[in-house]
Length: 395
Image (tube, rainbow, N blue to C red; front, side, top):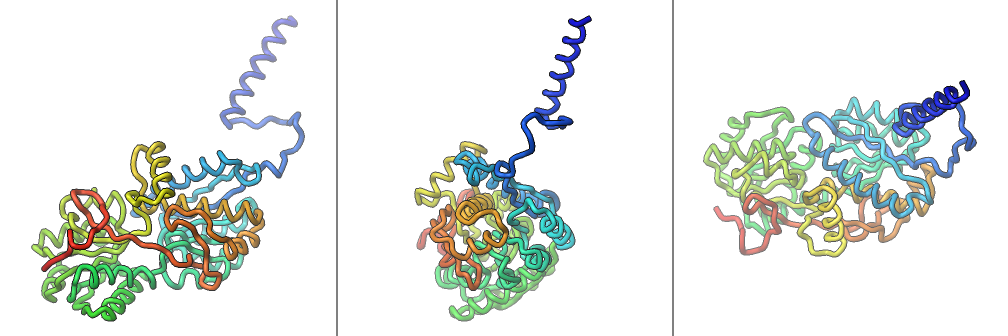
């Protein structure tokens, strides 16, 4: 009888141990006493697209986050506490970002938030983060008004007011375009970028001969391309994301428009090459990060990323990696208090960055001080560094 009891007890104990290890059971009591708050995870909330039309960007983010978490936690975490990410799928829908913001602000475990993908989706939630005293770190949010949402709203993305003159320099000064037609996604980001590019192009001696807006879910651009053709441009500028940018480029080539195409950096994604195929050959764009950059910090990151995933990092996985490493640096230096995170961003000096080399912020604009950008061209089905004189556009 005693043997039966012992064997039964062992079986129950073994089953409970297995379930607990799988996270499927919680013991009714603990022999080790209450949890030690000093060892609890430090949690960063992420609001971003894991499904929907921008899901590819969310997948790229996730890879960058996972590599950064592996490295941060492998080097001791945050004073011995593991760093964790709580990723909520927003589809970059402003209605969902608002609900996620309320959830994050109410969760005392979350010390800062990253995202969302589009500026419009992020800006819809900014008042909630600002009023809740939780840093909103929009690492892909380039709208000039984004960081004007308050002192808890920060970004290490290139500001549109900086990015569009950089794109105009490429199109007008480097490629020699003088009459350009613009196609832009008709949302707040697209309209703002269009206006900023037109202003910068004019200042550099070029004329914007036409501007055509389109909706995010639009698939047939032929009527707009007829109007673009009639303006007789010597170049076409796209303010688009990768999916619509690839579709437009395919349709303009099918329509016989052979002019050089210069696209905003938001098309810099493997999906742009996949969706556009041969049609996107020769498309020019800019990016703050390129895996072919010979800087040691870039090559170290590329080696680690390639070893983990079997593919090269892109702009969005590198931005996610950079954002998480930056926040980990700030939290290590300043603590996990939400206000301390905000104050730490204002004072951090020369934080490590694979995108910019090192980072410091302008505390007034809450943007990166003196960001970098690189000129690319699609060559032989891949993004490559543009070399003056080798792929210069011609009519």
